[in-house]
Image (cartoon, rainbow, N blue to C red; front, side, top):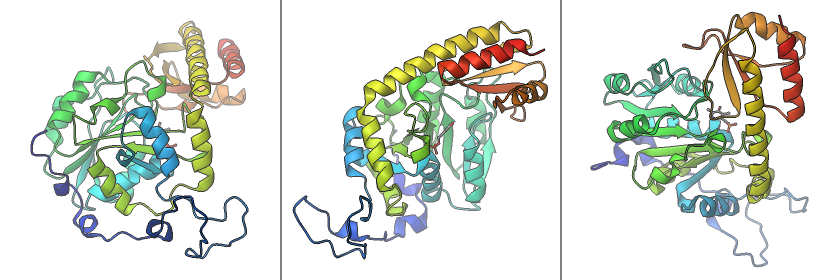
Length: 348
Ligand SMILES: *Cc1c(COP(=O)(O)O)cnc(C)c1O
């Protein structure tokens, strides 16, 4: 990655921006008894009457330790959705720049491109659901700022092969965002260890899936200190609330429980795969490294409706390219899985 210059990728307005300085930015407590009369808060203690730490230092320090990174390589957001939006706003000039996304994939990249008036250049995955490296290189131009790689990919479930991603990291002149929302279910390693090699790499993760905290909204962005510095400049000062910081900290501390739940989900996934494989109306099951299974069926609309009538909601992904007649099944608890399998076997 010789000659990589982040400044060339940052929007001019962001480069010139003087960030908002909050009360909690200007005076950082060292833990001693102080009278905090600087932020116009209600002084009566109810647990959340104070503004939260704008840089979420406790949580970041724990994540940094667990991942072997510096706290300055981490940005936290109100879900990955906020993190991804910040990345757009920092690097993509509306009505000028473009991003590359690889359908069938997570729908938010396209939506965020639309919201931010940024062109979304779509390059379909190959039929075995891998990035089409040559075709991606063909559509890239000088205004291609971001390349979104979702691995393990939603909705297909597979983690992409290492070689393809590596080629893209080495050749793409913008930033490569690897969305690892499902990494804790995968046997493949995270790309976090590649951060030291590739200054153009951003890895996003979330507490919404394996960590079981979709309700608190906590998304994580790992990148170089320089990239995180740019994102910190534009993030809303108090974007991660106090309750979220507390709950996230407790959960991230409890790795044993997370690992145990992930293992249970993986065991149940195997049960579900076995059952689906035995059904006549299931035409193909795609390999999965995530907590869901994508299945091609005879008639997705019909099967979706039949399941709904049995009070089971799955995701019909048939409108996505390469995903005609597919249903996506999230792995539930052992009880839910048993119920689902029994219902599937009764369908005709
Ligand atoms: C579920 C999911 C997310 C999670 O987003 P949050 O806003 O953190 O809940 C991110 N990326 C992908 C690909 C997902 O499937």
